[in-house]
Length: 280
Image (cartoon, rainbow, N blue to C red; front, top):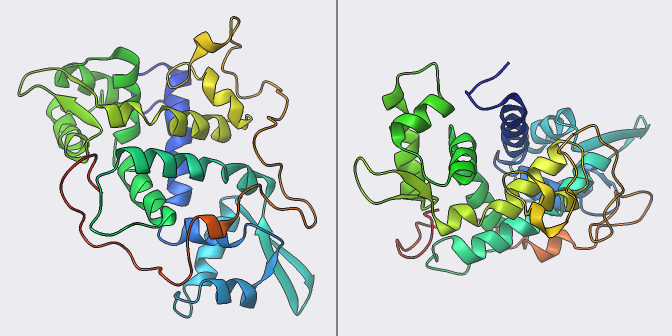
């Protein structure tokens, strides 16, 4: 069922990306996925890597990631249970460095150096605000849109003035810009820079290889290939060479969780200096 006045294919695309973001946004989910970037681990081994989690916090998080299809629980014997990525979970991992790259370029500078994992957590929080994905999609597609026109597209069944709270938030976050009251809205450089991230999430959520992100009709660059193929989620495409294969046996991704965070400093950042780039 359509949730906006966008074309059905676009509406479904936004819904899939929003769902993908919702899988990784909850606190500690990304850290758990990164801690599993290797051979399957027993619960006690995983808990040791995430020692800052209090008793009782890890199990429900693992269950939610298993329910989302990102982590699998394997019961070898009654006393030997291990956790590892599903193929789907392993295929999502290469999106995380893309988020770090965007954050390092566009997020405002904090008062202390931030770990890459913190960059990811801050970034996905911005993208999961209500109506954020749909607004970004429309502005990328149409370049400039008035608030009233944007409301008719993004929330057609609501009073059109309801578009302004999420719009003001996106402006405050530095992803959307406007020249003033009554003037059209457009993506900022930071909002436009989300193309690789949102294109990759769209490809992943549609079951496509991540290299198809470049062919996304909104966030990609179809001109890079003379004959772009249609954006069909059921279409069979070869696996991309640059991204790691899903883990089987003892193989591991091309990058490792230690590259993105250190277990010694799990604390969240304090308020960042309000200068330069989207707000955290």
